[in-house]
Length: 171
Image 1: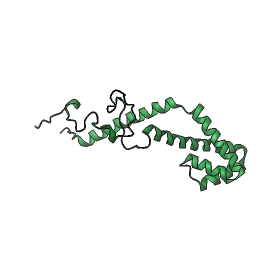
Image 2: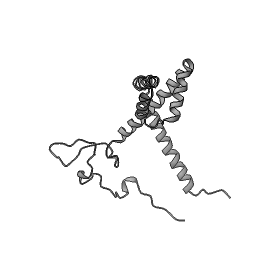
Image 3: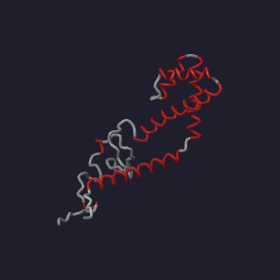
Image 4: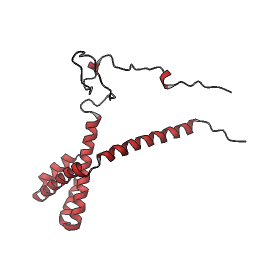
């Protein structure tokens, strides 16, 4: 019978230093520098490489911004479908020709399409703003995101352990 050695997480050798030796390589580091030690950063946040021009939060905010446009279009379309069928058809036709991937580009194109489309675009922007300010449940977003990450990590690790651990069957 073979025995396998297990190491506690603290016993595993660290390949990367706990603090970078040169912060000049990280010009977009999000932490503030202390004036008494200009080359040393004091930050408790995790460094996320590869985002250069924007933080992960800024990228997430951009995606949410575009998502709010999508939500506003859905809300306006549902409203129009019940009381202004002609405007609803115009909106659906415009949606067929223009992508909603970039909310601002979508609204800018709609503003320039025609005076009727301009009114639709203004309504979409108004609903987008109101939904973001008043109706979107920010706390619920954080709770759900944390729950999803935790459950996903647990499921993935469980599946991995089940795949890689030999199961002995009773004879």
